[in-house]
Length: 142
View (cartoon, rainbow, N blue to C red):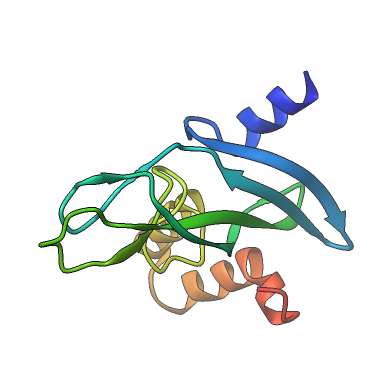
């Protein structure tokens, strides 16, 4: 039951992601997870592919929990595009509602920061965002 609760807490509405562990490492909460989808669609041509090329780990900053910064270590895969005419030979899978291309933050944290920027703007918003979301970056952990 605890696994289902944690899954819903961190990845509510996100499909095909499995939590492997949640650890408190000092002031940082680290959520280790991996993708579980059978295939992914090529972003260039839309062709679905199940031919895995490799795996790698992405580290995403996420919204704080209990005043502690959160880092998600997400294992994702690179796939080979099966379409010969496609300009991309390989592509990395993206997890809808969690990751975006070249992103180092979760989609949830990105949305919070965008709202903060619009509401506060200028230096006040930058200081608040830095203090609340990027404490882990200052310690060299992000």
